[in-house]
Picture 1: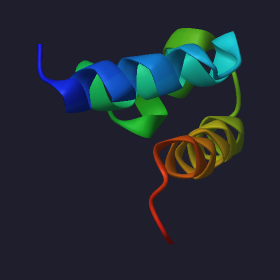
Picture 2: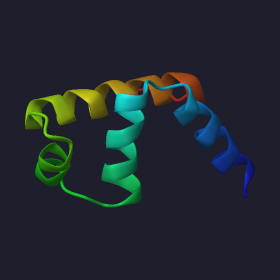
Picture 3: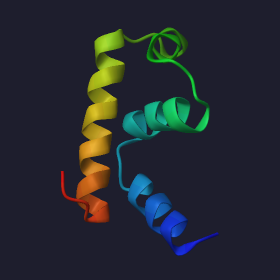
Length: 66
């Protein structure tokens, strides 16, 4: 595992569980947002909000400028 992977995994671990779940499903399982919403039985807008919040937090934790 590369140092970059280690940093990303550590940053992911700091997210709330609901955000971790949508990030995993979207990026690691490559599932569409609508499918995630169906699987978790939450509105599509909630999936998008959680992903947006998670990505903003990950950028902050990883030190990337937006």
